Each structure stands twice: as structure tokens, then as C-alpha cells.
Image (cartoon, rainbow, N blue to C red):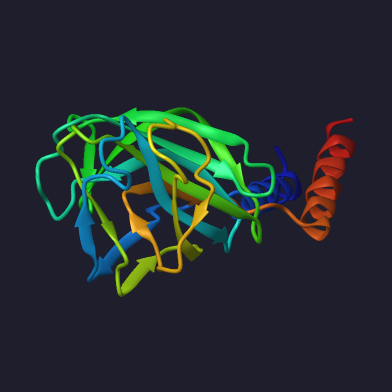
Length: 209
């Protein structure tokens, strides 16, 4: 391989690495204040609580999680779901328990298939709590720190025992801290980058002849 071909190849690899570089992070990292509750509707066999948010970056979600409520032991397994707000479609769900990875006070389970979130679009993250599961979420925190998203408001189920369905109730509070997620920032190549990669590949083909 001559020097020019090596330069072209290295430049192309650099463009690809820069274009598709990602960094994984826990999305909700901290919160303060608020009160703990075991369930929204008393006696319910399962209600979803959580929060709506706007993605500030193109994100690829790889894991969903649930809080252990101030470092208490997670007593029961909980379903965690991720929905698109505009369509109310369930994009991903998984059952999380105390044996799953513990990070920043949340247990996380890896999704079998990652989910892509579009920058500027709204989504809803919710966790299912039942009357007798022995666990709690935090409602009405005074502040929330999150990476790559803007939290809009808390959500709740409009009646009891609905199970893992899109929660229709919007709260005036900041959030109901039960669910969380791990995601990577996904860099989408622009037209200029794609053009440079194309020209580099064309040059490689011409020198191969």
C-alpha cells in the first residue's frame, strides 16, 4: 500500500470514528427533596408513575432501571417502560430486580434491543408499582439533575390497577422518580461528512485499479 493510499485510509477511518463516537451515561444522576410513596392509587395491583422528558441529543437507550429509594434494598421486581409521547407507543420494557446492576441508586437491566431517541422529541419513562411490592418512588423532588434530556413533568395512572400502560395523568410537579435509563449519545453524520467519506472511498477504489 503506497503512502497516498494509507493517508486516504487513515482519514476515512478518522471520519468514521468521529462521526459515530458515543459515550454511555446514566441519564438521571441526582435529585433532592420530595416525598416517598409506595403507590399512587391505594390498593392497586399496579400503576405506572414516572416523568415526561425531551431528548436534547440523539440517544440510543441500552438499559432501563428503577430506583432503590435512597439506597434501601429493592424488595420486588418492577416493570419499566419507555414510551413515545406523540404516539403513546411503548418503545421498550423490561423487568428490573435487585440482582441487576446498581448504579447511582438505581438498578439497571440491559435491553435485548437498543432504542433510538430523536433529539427534540418527547418521551415518557415509567415504572410499575403495586400496593404490596414493598418499594417506593420519590414524588415532587425540588430539583433533578439529568444528562442529555430536559425533564418536563411527573406522570401517573388516572385510575388504579391498569398495569404497564401509558400513564395519562400529567402532574404539576417536576417528576416522580422511579424509573431511569442508560443511553449513549449517537452522532448522526451530516451531508458534508458523508460526502467526504464517499470521496475517500472513491479515491481508494481508483487507486486499487
